[in-house]
Amino acid sequence: MSDLDPNPAAEVCTPAAGPGPLAELYPAREVPLGGVRGVFVERVLPQRDLPTVGAWCFLDRFGSPTVTTTGAPPDIEPHPHIGLQTVTWPLEGNIRHRDSVGSDVRIEPGQLNLMTSGRGIAHSEYAVPGAPAGNGLQLWIALPGESTGIEPHFEQHRELPEYVAPGVRATVLIGTLGGVTSPARAYTPIVGAYLSIEPGAEVRLPLDPAFEHALLGVEGELTVAGVELAPGPLLYLGTGRSEVVLRSAAGARVALIGGEPFAEELVMWWNFVGRSHEEIETARSQWEARDGSRFGPVPGHPADQRIPAPPLPGLRLTPRKRRVGTPHH
Image (cartoon, rainbow, N blue to C red; front, side, top):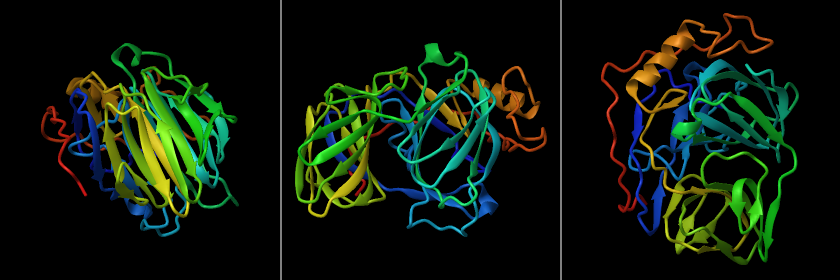
């Protein structure tokens, strides 16, 4: 899954300062995936006032039972990325991933699929015939400036470590949680985990106080830091927490993201994460010019099977100030 909005908004993300402990709800918004395809996703990041959580700069829930869909298969033709890592975490269904570095893999639930775009990569995602409809999470991690020019690569981790404590079992996708570290390669101090909370549990989840964190409910309901969290909105927890208390009467599943507040200004547009209007404009021009030196072909797709870049907005991209501290219930 990627940002296929034919009229993408420009997102300029300013450096974050640690706001201290917070408990703010940011609503999901339903956005089209590919427009006429009739497939929609729930997007909770970026938000107008919260463009990033650590280096996490994008979070979609696809296949949610509450979103509008025609049942059309979510096949996504080749398209480009720069300056980010994509994290695909399917909850059900299978996806065939192919990319310009030669990867051709089947993405299944319980596996971490991490694509690092670096200076530039192209990829496609197709539904697997006969497999259940897709349902899961798609996230982006912004690469720090010193890593944006690295060679693109793809990782698939079929076995991931777990943090286990009374009432909770957490699969650590990337980074470290409670002393348990994922093998996935990270370029900034970060954490991503998928938690299963047992019915009737009260869990004291350890956190890094230098990180900011957020939680996305996926299934069931729980109380986090005194706030009721159901599937849909993102609960932003701020910084300065060494732990957070999670309670669930009937059990729940929730995604945790966090990291050191990102110290660089980002410009996000379409499928690109850059540092300036000029960088985005150049990447777009190279994709449209079919510049194979930056965006190679995706094996299995003819040259004309690709998603064209939408036109850039008529205005120059300018910074958008980050604002936290106002409840979004």
